[in-house]
Amino acid sequence: MGQLIMWNLVSVDGCFEGETPWSLEWFQRGFTGGAIDFALDQLRTADVLVFGRKTYEGMFDYWPSATGDIAELMNTLPKIVFSRTLSGSVWNNTRMVADDPARLMGDLKQLVAQNILIFGSAELSMPLMNANLFDEYRLGLTPVVLGRGRRLFGEGPERRELELIEARSITASLLLLRYSPTADRC
Image (cartoon, rainbow, N blue to C red; front, side, top):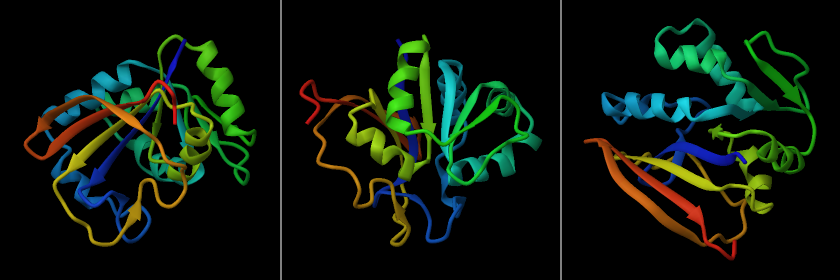
């Protein structure tokens, strides 16, 4: 059975995006050296990548023309995009879906052997969180306070009790925090 895993870089004040959409220049501070190795290792454990429409559009703008090991994995792994407005994609191995994300993800977890990774996609993550479908939350804490920006968890989810399963430095500027929901899935 697959594990549904959220992965996001976040600022110290909880933002995963700057003041404007896709203002991510602050990511670069944490995404060097060992972080690239971590990204590759993480992608190698995935059966499927999942995005909401906004994250998909940003990823599609970058990855199809990128090169390197990460780009190869991003471009070849199967991708599911949840969107009520997009109907098709030319990005390799991408399927557009307008179905209920919680229902589809619950079914997909039963069909895959490895991980299902969700990058970004804060709006998509809310119904998945509320349906208790995430098996793990991976946050890459980057040492910057943005002051303004889009908060990863916004005002959306209900209270969640999490258990820290790992905390380690990936680089001098990136701390990996891995959490799992507690057994009672509050």
